Image (tube, rainbow, N blue to C red; front, top):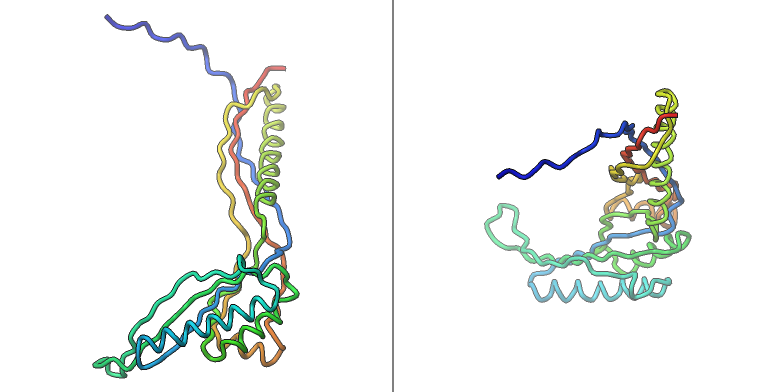
Length: 222
């Protein structure tokens, strides 16, 4: 025995549009990814040299205002170094990566100077990225702008169709994309800038977030 089909009414008239929005703010923190690279004939000596340098760099960072929570080890490794023809191990290289979170942009130059002095030629700058300490509010503003954009379009279409907007039937977020490109450099570039300018000048610029949303409204006859 078949079950009776569920009665469904006609699908209400609807308008469905896509809205986009952006929001911008000046970055207020800098994330510095740096590496400590130490070469030695043996594994133990390479690791010991890297550990000593990391301690010196961390101490220099703390002396320039960074808290313990702003200094993080992100990776560590030790690898053999081969001779020119690759036939024998010539020594070992220990590598330790740290990330420093600088919450005061004006202090960046002094911090870079201090870290470079503490690490010497063992220092590698893997990347410098300007960011926001709190991204949530910026993303919220971008979503609000996207929804407003969608609503403006839908109201225009409704008026053209001789109707008005009713209840919202569906909301689908398309995502948001940061609009900032990180600045990166290697140790040699960093050291040359330090020598010529007394540090690493960084322009904050703006950090932008974009959002896209697809919204459907019921169309109500006027």
